[in-house]
Each structure stands twice: as C-alpha cells, then as structure tokens.
Length: 153
Image (cartoon, rainbow, N blue to C red):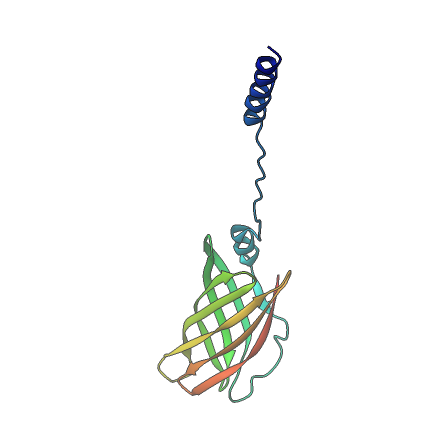
C-alpha cells in the first residue's frame, strides 16, 4: 500500500510539473525605419548657402521630400554648381540604419544655353537635425564632387 501511495504521489507531482512551463520570449528591437524615414521629411537646406562653388563642386543644396515609403523619401531638389549652373529636379534617399543612399536627377540652365542633365549621387549620414551628404556626379560642364551639410529648416 505504501508503494501504491508513493507511486500515486509521484505520478501527481510529475503531471503537475508537466503543466507548468517556462517560456522566455525576447524580441530584438531596433530603430523604427518608418520613424527614421519620417525624420527625413521636411525642408532641408545647405548650412553654408553663401559659399561660392569651386569649379568642381555644387553648393546651396535644397531638398524638400514630400513622398515617403517605409524606407525611402523623395522630393524636389535644387543646387548651384560650378559655372553658375542653377540645378533643379528630384532627389530620392533610401534609408538603411542612419545611412542614406541617395541620388538626384536634375536639369541645369545657363543663360543663353540649352538645359543639360545633372546627376548626383552618394551615401549620406542622417543626424538628428542634419544630413551630411558626400556627393559626386556629372554636369554639362564636367564632373563635380564634394560634401554638403543640410540642416532641417
């Protein structure tokens, strides 16, 4: 009888412990890409807008993204490049972490000259209220490259 009672107690104990489980769920969280892309929206302009471009640079960048997806933003873009080229078109930035792969597709105009295509691209870094934009590309007057800092306006 003692063996029967011991066996019953052990059976009940084992059954009870099998009903109790341990669960550990951990979720890796990272930056919310939608929130980061939203941070790119708004009006952005070069910090040093009064700088005169050298023969191989562009200055006075302005970017106003008005369209966004979960990982990108697109909007109007303008700049002044060497040779007094006034550039305007669109720029798109695709965000991965705090790095933005971007490209601008624009046209430029010189007084008395036909318009020409301007293509700029680079990998930018998104800050809290600024974007550091290293760029390189081509204009009808030749290649351009440099670094611009855009501040949120």
